[in-house]
Image (tube, rainbow, N blue to C red; front, side, top):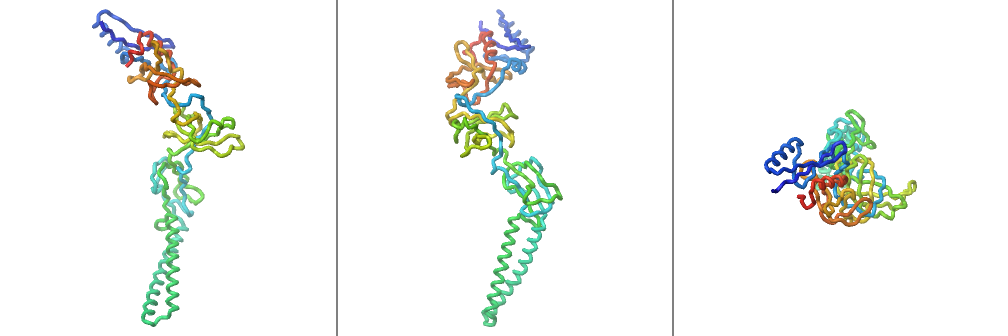
Length: 389
C-alpha cells in the first residue's frame, strides 16, 4: 500500500518535534490527514518542510539570497550615499525679483522644461521697456534710411546723410538683438516675469521660496534631483589601499536598510590620500540603485576584490547541511512558510561563506541560517533529498 509522507515542523517555546500517523486503512488515513490539516490551517505537500513565521523567528531561521561575492574576505569601509553632481539642479532667477507663482510642491516629479514658478523682476521689466524703446527708434531709423536711399537714387540726397542713416539703423538693430538675447537668457515672459523651469527630469527635493518672497540669483528657489543617479563615497585606510582599484567589485549595505544589499564597482580612486584622515577617497557606482536611497545615508562599502565576473556564487556556511550523504540547502518553497530541499555542489570556503558551483541560481531565496533545524525535521520524518520536488 502506498502511503503519502507529509512533514510538518512544529516549533513551540523553542521545542521542535515532528508528528505523523500511519494507518493500515487507506481511507481512514486520508480522512484523518484532511482533518489534521484543517486544524493546523497548513498545506501539506510531500518534500516540503512547513514552518510558521513565529516558529522561524524562534528557531532563528533567516531568509536570504544566493549572491556573488569574493571569498578571500573583503575590506569593509564606512560609506555615505551622495547624489551625482550632474543629477542635481539648483533653480534660481538670473535677476532678483518677487515670487508671484509656485507651481510645484515638495516631492513632485517634474520633467525637463517644466515651469516650477514665476518671478516678477524690476530688472526684467526695465530690460523689456528698453527693448520696446529700441524697437521704436529702430522703426524710425529704418524709415529715415529708406528716405535717404530714395533721395540718393534720384541724385537729390547727400551721401553723408545716407551713411549716417545706415549707421543709426545698424546700431539700433544690434541694441534690439542684445536686449532680446538678454531677456531670452533671463527666461522672461510678459510684464517682466521670469519663468523658473527645471533643467532636468527629477524630483523636487527642496523648495526655498514662498509667494511674495524675494528671490535672488545667489539663492536657489527650487532644487531638483534625479534620485536614481547616486554614488557611494568611501575612504579606504592607508594600509588597505592595495586592495582597491578602478573596477574593483564592491557590495554596499546601509544602516537604515540592513536587508538591502547592492552590488557595484569602484569607478573612481582619488590620486592622493586625504591628509587629515590618511585614507584614500573612492567612489562606488551601483549596478541597480534602489528607490529608497537618499543622499546622506550612511553604511559600509565592502571591497570584494576582482571584477564582478570573477566573483563566485556563495551562500553562508550555516545555510548548508548534509542529508542522506548529499550536501543540501533549503530553498523557500512555493507555499507560504515552506522550505524545499535542494542538493548543491560546493567549492571553496572562506570568511563564513562557501562557493556554490551548481544547484543554485543567483538571487535564489533560501534559509541562510537554521539549516540544522530543518535537517532534523526532515530526518525525523524519514524524508531524503531524493524525494524533494
